[in-house]
Length: 247
Ligand SMILES: [Zn+2]
Ligand SMILES: [Zn+2]
Image (tube, rainbow, N blue to C red):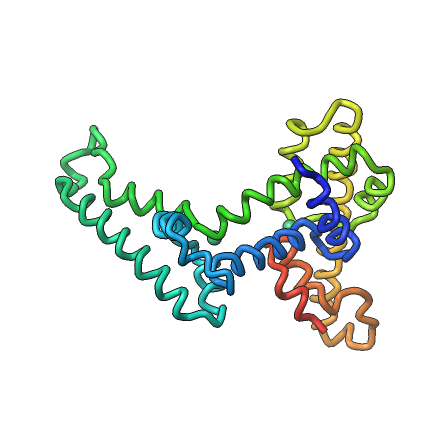
């Protein structure tokens, strides 16, 4: 793994002091992936890449992001060939015998129809998600690497505002596989502490936000609660956009 390309974006993300530096990294990767998919490089005009996007399609979130991008013609071309392929595959799947009324199968469950299998498989795939995930794993591994190698990063990590629930789990679950004996325990304990402190801090801010909407607290100071809801969206749902739009 070429660690150097990954260390700087990670240090930048941790320096920004957001409610989840991993969300911040993911967001940058996502911007790059959207740019790669539909931007000026026109990767979608290359045969092997188009074959992939035809097969994988796009998840709801990324289809929406692609639609927001000014290149409507590019998206139309990608969608058209993706829909060609989907229609072809579905027509094949439709040829299988149709499902029977459930009442006939009380004991023996009938096999899942190919139409359902095909659509369910498709729902798991997304060209943009796939592109992001390739680098995302490397970024996560670089966090472990930096933690083991650099005292400064260990301090930065421990002083961070914590993580969203999803990325807390990602960091927690990957550590035993990547990290050596020397720092694993310390890392997991620091991770637990930073996560729960940050999570409960935002929870407390939300509590004060609720109070501040009550007339009895009108004269009290806002403390840190003004943007509590936006920061709650990061912690609970990995949603960064609202945190950026706050005043
Ligand atoms: Zn996150
Ligand atoms: Zn996606």
